[in-house]
Image (cartoon, rainbow, N blue to C red):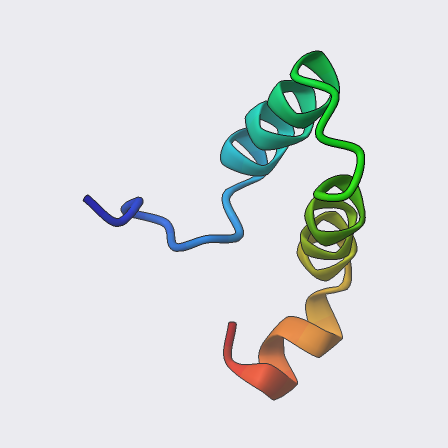
Length: 50
């Protein structure tokens, strides 16, 4: 099921970040960090309608 608030819900991103670190999925962490940056950058969200 897709999250109600979309993919940029901070709690989901944070949980994914912690999971990747816990499971030592180092190759995935840059992708998670890019979502963190998108979440924090509201003008980019508005332009991209994320």
